[in-house]
Length: 610
Image 1 (spheres, rainbow, N blue to C red):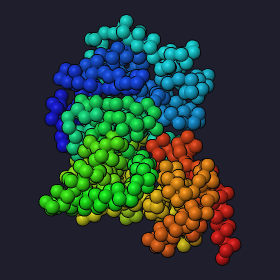
Image 2: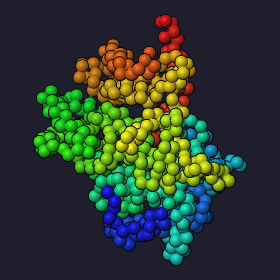
Image 3: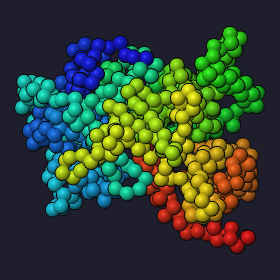
Image 4: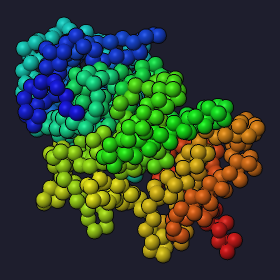
């Protein structure tokens, strides 16, 4: 659906300050930004947002921020972050958010590479990693601004910066600064978190991201001014689009969720009409629901299964662009009202009209699980380098398991090895160089190699099969998609995470992790008591079930793809322990290095058994 709001010009000629000016003038009393304050929410309208952005811009200018320079930020999803981002953009500066989980070496690399003189950080936890850079002769960093005043020490505080902006604000200077900004000017630099190596700086312009927002909006079925729960890091392109740029286009309402682990509670409270989750979030939500279902009486479970069958049958007709038979529609509507909605209401999922996922392949069993609740997850695909999505599923055209069709203005083609190439106006110009220029990444005809492997079906839907660099090539010369094998074995509810290894080997081995939500419920339903995940992983009944899970997965895979040996681990992988990126993608290299001895041991066990 295309928003009915007036655009202040042609999409390719608009900047985000122009959108904020429109929102303040035409939708000024509507809620724009909310965040937790005590037991409730504090809210700014669009007119209030613009006034605060203007004051902040004056404060940053007084601090010495100049047009075109990078300003680093490491804060959670809090108003200081969101408002500072827009204030810097109005000055013509370039906000760069750094992941809060970044190691000191990664922070130092970004500080040196971006040549930033100023960084805005949250509090003492961040200061411990940033302060040493002030004394580093090889790092241009000169000043730190701290959001938490009690933890600022000798550094500038966000409050004092805002106060100086209030004293020095000039409406004329503010308007001149943002009106001098052109669509081709840089809007932000996003450092890709990556699974290996140093992060690369992806420079994106106003034109890149205005066009991305406009084109994505055409695929999103939402009421005007809908709420968005903003919980992913602003260092990730998905949340920058969904939590900043798309709301500016749609004059929507952003609800900041500072603690990502509290997103389920926020959903239960707010009952959103839209929700975006990376695959791991949808997996964990599905595991939580399955754990609850396991405790229900058998008669109620049967009613839910029957309702789920109706929902999936209805989704199948919609997927094939067929009219849903009247009898099926009536039966589904009744089952939804009487069986599904009361349970969805408890989870805050009863009002959803648009649900989506991206960043990594979505396990098909998770997609089908949610389809059984009447929730069709519109999987999408894209990269930071493409300003977000390249392809999307939408209500007027989707295929469960695919990542949809190309958005307007983007072209796709497949190389001989299946690698996906793309070109269009939302594709970035190149990676940032330390001297401020960009290093082009497209070929002479403008095609950018994405590094993803996929296939296009006869209807133009794209199916992602793997990352090019992550393909396993066995010693027999066979190519294996680790994501395919991992998602197949993860279809068993006990298995929450998996890594398959076999590059240069003649067979595959795997590391498996119990699902922390569903495994305890599965065990309790069978009278198994375990005080810790380690005890549960070692219980004979659990181990027997995992054997059956691997055997069932192997039965669906070809011989080269089958898992020969595996080890069940006791602790979940996460960003804090390094196995996942901040966007919850698997860091294969980190896992292989961390568990190298264990992987070698699995091969030794297999060799001894031969």
